[in-house]
Image (cartoon, rainbow, N blue to C red; front, side, top):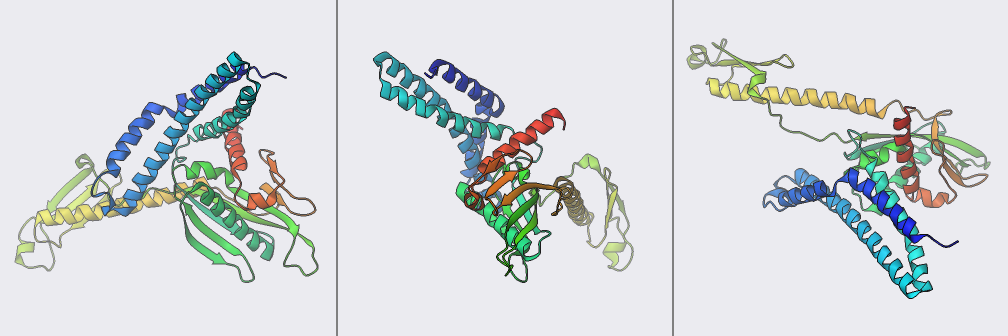
Length: 370
């Protein structure tokens, strides 16, 4: 059947317009300009952690903008190619245009998935923890297989990772492992991988060659952005001065040099009287107050991370994906029904289709309220 190129190109433009409406290229350009200015600062690498964050955000914004611009150009080129082929009645050129159509659709689909990452924490980097569940040594081996799968996925995309902790099992594999994927939107992308994963295979650890079912839990949480300093508005602080008491010498005890600082929103009170002057005590009290507020914020963020991670079990009845190596080979996601017969490729990090399907499924659940 002949392809209606006019209708196909119109549809491609419609999809691109809907993506553009969400991603806002002008905002991206402004973001790239601002981050480029920050990246050019001569003292950028005085703070390596901040520098890495700036350069990573810049690279990500540039990539997003380039993808949008290149797709728009590809659609323009396709339209010109079709017009030329039709004018000259060139079947070979039309065939070339027909081959380009699905490639552009795939690129648009990939970009469209990214627009679905709009949750509060989706833009954050990710911390992934994998724990062996039911299944003994096979479960520990499965946990290590999953860790390699995610690290290979990140490597394929050029995403930096950092392994934070590994607890090895006695015979083989891992009891648990925790690692970071250090790229913007890693959390939004990988959060659909959270849950219980199930492996069915002939156990390499069973000398009778029996089939074994084992489980591993994957937990994905957003990396909370580290803040080493907290600005406190003057309006939130009540300062009382009083005469110091106790040892310290005459200059301490005879002047109103002691400071009591109260943080009104939280009720945290800090008293400082070790320094000789009120100015010194005030500065010291402010430092202590900032430290306590930072600690409180970190505790709140840890509680938020636990709530986001949820209660991930690793046993029968609640698995979200099955990896079957025996009696047939199939990886199937039980939420989206997406499946892949090349299990070796999946374990080697080719999981983009599963992730994309998961992101679309999650968005549909949010839309329908299920």
